[in-house]
Length: 318
Image (cartoon, rainbow, N blue to C red; front, top):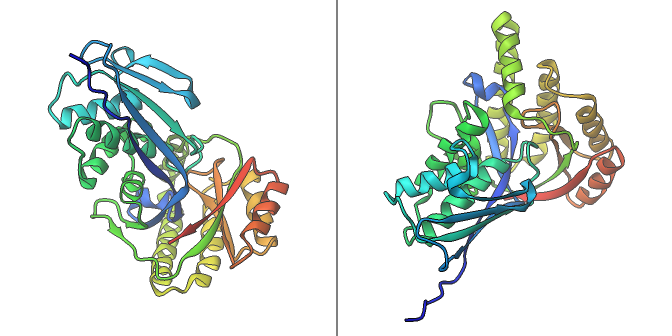
């Protein structure tokens, strides 16, 4: 009896940037994040009819991973994503398959690479097993995996990436999606400096614990900017976002999470005509985002590359 070959199954998930509210979100203030569809993580599954049942072979060229699922430590995020999906489907021994994970999202750059990889894997594995999971479950499982990356994640990354929509988030409250009234362009530029969010969040917590008062004021100011930004986006008043971004960057400088490299890119973007620019994500490295007036994104991209960005691209938020 011949084996009926099954087609490969693939799933992808976009990146994300935080538009407003990083760091302050940890302390109960609102944050806004938007999907970035120009970069994505992809999971491709092919059946492996020659292998024994339950065997899963994983390759992820970007991180030089070539291993069997059974040999990976439980805290490995790729293994954890597979395990979470199998547990959700109450399946201990799936048909043997090969999983290939690729991503164009820079790692540790604040673009949500970890969550995007998890979302793509959970979608691909559940579809391969004949039970594609609904978005709310995909997001919940990816959130559990995020805990391995970030310790205490906010839930922003898995939500914005799973639903591929702009979100407004306050810790402990249900996440709301935001309607973008008028699309706008962002230039995203990478310092090339890897900066794990976990560490900057821990540093901010240390200084906040030693002297909460001034830091609470900074967090509240950042929260007010996020509230104003949401209103601007929903009314299609995108020009208003520029000054709010500039102010948010200054407050993040006061939190000591910026860096000379980030500040240099922010300045270069503004001088090239950006309506506003700020660091995005944990800071100390990673990315800046700049709001580009219509037709100026390419010019701003060239300017930030000239100022030392390792890579830059632009995206339309819609």
